[in-house]
Amino acid sequence: MSDEKRETREDSSIKRVISSGNTELDSKMGGGLPVGSLTLIEGASGAGKSVLSQQIIWGSLHEGFTVSLFTSENSVKSLVSQMQSIDLDTIDFLLMGKFRVFPMQLARLGAQAPSNLVRAMTQERSRDILIVDSFTSAIAHASTDLHVLSFFEHCKRLCANGSTIMITLHAHAIQDDLIDALRSMCDAHLLLRSEQDGQKLVKTLQVTKIRGAASVTGAIVGFDVEPGWGMRVIPISKARG
Image (cartoon, rainbow, N blue to C red; front, side):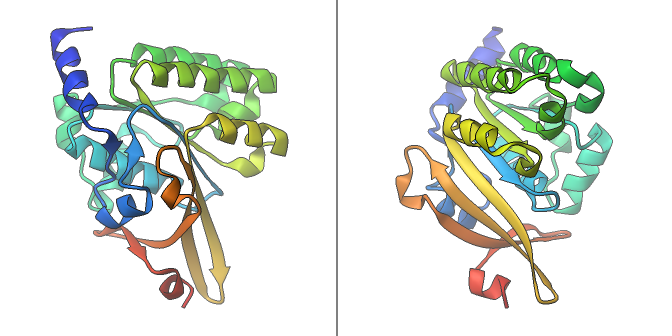
């Protein structure tokens, strides 16, 4: 590890939690996600998984962490544009090398997707935070459940060596016994839902588990995503009208 990377890791390791940059959101997560944790961000399509991960990316960069994102959802250009549209500009961090983006066509990799992703993440293990958005297509094309479990076990080993990892996932594409096993392996589990309430679309975030912050377990918050504003926490009663 270079002196510059070692200094960055030492500076960031002083912090015990990773802030999203949104005070209200952090308060619902016991102050933020613990450094060195493996977090599963779960939800259906359109529930806000990518937006939440982008909010955490933005907040962590401003806290001085280095981040690598492995995305099957965006190109670098589309990601920057998408984040700028919700007031989460990361272009300076990209230019400084604090933020790296690796577009990956996981569906095209087929059964090799989990192992290829493991290799890519291992090469970036000197970074403070590794994010996979999303892992759904890799699971769908994995040969066996053991390959998926092996991927998460490798993530746990990276976390034990100082990395913080977040993985977004569409659970509806996975069998119940497998998703239950993955949830149990993770240190934190955030569940996003998007439901139709009359003519209004209601988005909610449930903090089902954060090890070391048991007081927030089960907390449910409503949120909006507004152009030029970003992710805004709102009372559940207001979200549901």
